[in-house]
Length: 400
Image (tube, rainbow, N blue to C red; front, side):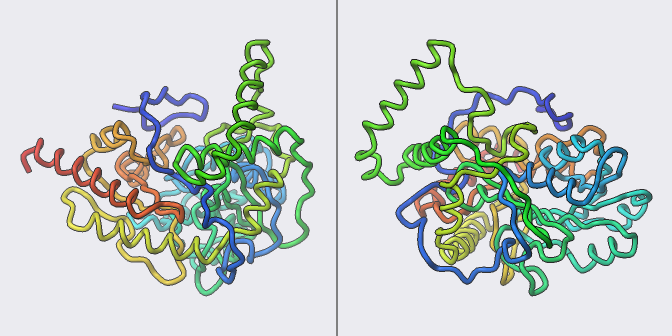
C-alpha cells in the first residue's frame, strides 16, 4: 500500500506512471484570451500581490499577520503539504482540526485546539465554499486571524461576496484556473507587497513552458508549426549547456505546485507572460465551461457503483476547480493512472500526526478529475468511459 502520511520532503517515490494524455490543468488554446469579464473572483476581495505560487502567497500572508516562532496555526486535517510548509518555515506550530464528511470544518474540534492559536486557515475544497459566516464568528470570538484559502476557488461567490472577502487575508493559485505554468496571489486589505522581477531567462522560460504544454496536448497547431524552428534551437542550446555542465538549477526554473518550499522564490513576482494571461483571459468562458464540464462529469458518473460525487449539486456562484469523486476501490486510482487519465489525489500525503478519519479516508479514496475550460468534450467522454470501465471491472472482480 502506498504511503498515507509523511513529512514534507520524505515522500515515497511515486510509481512510474505514463504521462497524462489530456490536460490536468488549463493549457493555452485559441479560446483562452478575450475581453469578457463580469465574473467575481478573489481579486475583487482586496489588493492583490501576485506571487510565483500559492505556497509563497501563504508565506507572505503569515508574515503580514505577524505569525512567527511558536505561534499556533489551526489547519484543516485534509490538506496538501503546501499548506503546512509555510507555517513550519515561519517557525509556527501547525495544529490540525477535523472535518465533517461534507468537508466543512468541525468547529467543536477546532475549539478544543484553539487555545493560544493566532490564526485559522479555511480551504474552499474543489471550489465549493466553506461556511464562512460560522468560521468568521469563530475567529472573531477568539481574536484569531482567518486565512481564506482560495487555491481551489479563484472565481465565484460565498454569501453574496467574492471568494476571499471573508478572511483577514486570502491566498490563491492562479495556475489552477488560467493557462499558465506558475502563479499565486495574496489578497489583503492595505497596500500590496513589493516584489522583485524574476529575470529575463525566467520570463522566456515561463512563456515557452506554457506553449510547449499546449502543444503536447494538441492545442495551437498552427502556432507550433510557425515557432517550431525557434524551439528546436532552444532545445539544442539547452542540450549543449547540459553537456557542458551548465544545466539550469532550481532557481532558474519556473515553479509549479509540485515544488517544495524554496526561499529564493519568496520575494519574486510571476512573469510578465503570466500576468498578461491573467489580465486578458476570457473569464466568462472560464466560469461557464467549468460549470458545464462539471455537469457533464456528474451525469457521466451517475449511478456508478462504489462511487459517490462529493458535491452532487452545483450551486449558483460556484466555479469548480475539479470534479471530486469518492471511489471505494483503491485499485481504480493506479489503473487509471496507467491508462494516462489525468487524475490526482488531493491530500495524498498528509502531515505527520494527522489522525482525522475523514482526512485519512479522503486522501486515499477521493479522486479529482479535470473540468477546466480547456477540456474538450471528447476528452471528457473518454475520461468518463475509462472511469466506468475501471470501476466496473473492480466491482466484477469483487463479485458484488
